[in-house]
Image 1: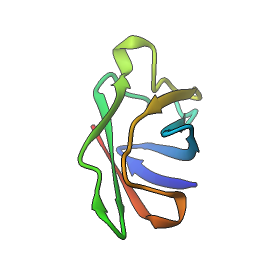
Image 2: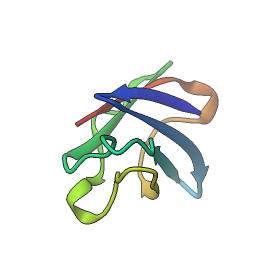
Image 3: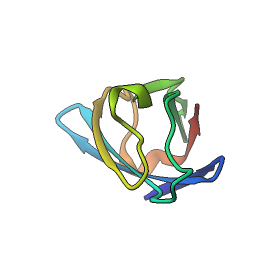
Length: 91
């Protein structure tokens, strides 16, 4: 599990490798001021460098709302779970 503080929100990230892709689960804090309508990207850093920005989605599409859990399937090539050191979340 990884987490990052984004403004007043704490967004938790869970990664699970599934058949060549990664299942990314985000949980946005339930505070009324939490959530975003911005594009959310992650960058995975590890022993093999970094993945570059991977777009998860936009809050205006119903994702990243207060108290909400969202699931995404993304391609992050070259990474196995033991090779990940940290994840950067950006808006």
